[in-house]
Image (cartoon, rainbow, N blue to C red):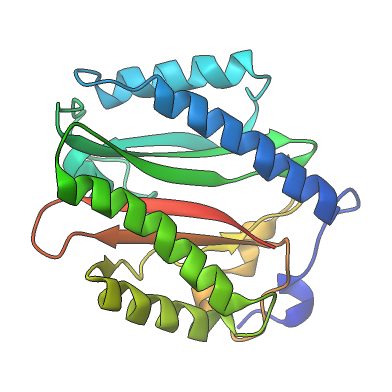
Length: 220
């Protein structure tokens, strides 16, 4: 198990204000990419559009590759790079996950969106965001251990009518370059997560239909 010292380690250039500002800048990138998505695009085309947008915003350097997932591929975890190059349907759901290096820090944000008129897909996209905020409120600036936090997240998801994917359990960030991912997963952390160092990831799925939603942001 990781020690508190290793899970809280940062490089010489890390600062909480810079970490927060990097996140805020990254969210502008996600929002612009989401606005450029439209039915008929394939995931590969969406990624190319997204990369161009990030380049125009000065966010071309990344510490993890951009992920854009449509439809049934929203059930796939980040490490699963397989699957069909799906096209976005008229009534569909998608998510965007980016990890740009900004202000010398490892920004990491992701969100889900729905297009068209499918009420379940719109509800799923909104639920991932709402569940994130519920779980962040439970965290309350380090009031609960990482292991217990994700146990509560699963309970909250079920109460909302969704299934939480516990294979997606959050991770460390810091200044760049920094071996933060060696600190393990937030959901495996048996200590209190420090503000500004952990990304809370939420991935849910519809209880009966083949799609899900994703949302992530910085705790603190």
